[in-house]
Length: 474
Image 1: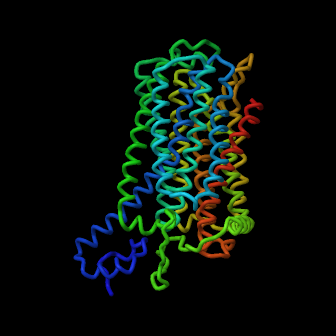
Image 2 (image 1 turned 180 degrees about the horizontal axis):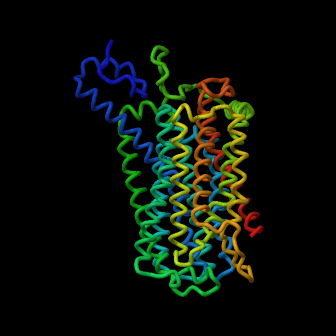
Image 3 (image 1 turned 90 degrees about the vertical axis):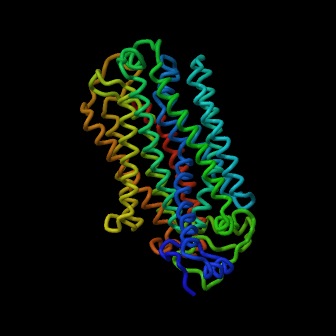
């Protein structure tokens, strides 16, 4: 039997009825089917973007959060508190969602979590019009961060499970989306900063507080955050409608049926290298699942440590410390300088992830990846040597690294190495061909994929807590 569909793109294994029907289809029908499957990959790219949007909404809008608590005791630590609440909340609930993923419908989790995310981002948008005390704003921000952590945990586990069962191409598109959204968000934030600062001077905004004054006007930060949160709300809505379309496609409902409580059997003759990563529909007890989880964890401990440690290093200084690094040129507005550093960090992170797609630049030996992860520790002292604002300092301290260009180069290297190391560890751990620890072959891929996401959150939470210790060094 021959098929008019290009074999290189068939990541979705067809059912017998589908295969028989394809013989009678004309080229146009097969082409339409390929377009649907190709579009599904891009929807998973969008879902990958939606996964990291809440986190980027909190980190990239740090100038707005700082402006609302400027001059209060919350100013030095609000960034660390926001990061800690979000990452610790997501760490706990993501483990819970992973353990209960087979007891609930993945599609319902995606619909519900994205709907709540729309409301939460809209609340942040509304907050740019309302002013209150610093304490009330901190309480509001932490509640929103906690709620985002809970809803995003359900979204992350459901989307990653779907990507794993659909195949490696879908998993790659999801990871690419997670990195791309950071770049898009930072660019939007930079554009918002430029628009809000057009014709203004640094002395009219938060820079007054940065040099010991009292902030009376933070309209630039409000306008920038308003534009950003408005665009973010629209994006989540578009993502929700895109997934609603995908959920109605027959091939998608068939392949992801194990995630909805509907079994799907794949004949042995249809399994090849393009088949989805997860094909084991055998029921397992909770005890068997736990035993299998810890067995796979022991076999892949090096990869998991690399993932967590790389995130720990990054989060210990980014954005809690880097958002407080100021330009050595007083003519450059602090909010603009911070926005530029977000663009460089996120763009270099994406570049590092894309580098892993080049075979001659990728390293799959877990021991070598471990060495690279440890080498990244050097970025912590390097950032502290830059022009970090110290609100409690009685005298101005001259930075050791007094060059804006050199600081941005450090940010670039930190972002690039983060994207490179974490992507190598995640993709290497999930590949039976590259990971000797996957002794169960494809049967363990779903566990490793979920485990990688959980250890990302371990690293994020550890880094957020470590940022308090780094703060104490300033």
